[in-house]
Image (cartoon, rainbow, N blue to C red; front, side):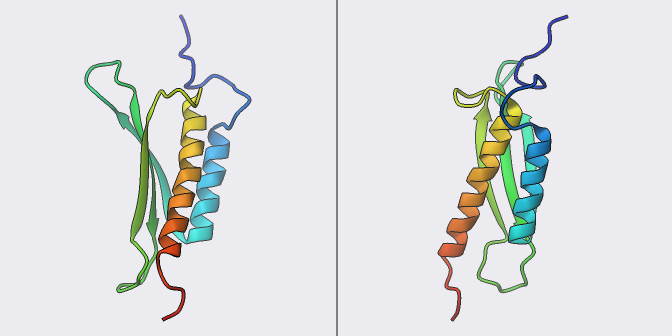
Length: 109
């Protein structure tokens, strides 16, 4: 039986423990719940997957900050060999998008 490459093969890049730790760090820094959602993309068995990273924030009603931020990209891709490295990079992108939402709001009124 042939093993699938890119899903569970060891690599020199980030693994699923790195993904988990980064999710916890982003959630702690930004006071929110961080999730990675992996869903089938396309029709049939060869469409790959859509990977979404989202942040759902603990904000009080009427606050200026958004309730959530979401980024999504397809995998397999030409940049990341493994699904874990793809998810890890997506979390970095999510953190940048969260930062943009903070910069778009005034700190003090």
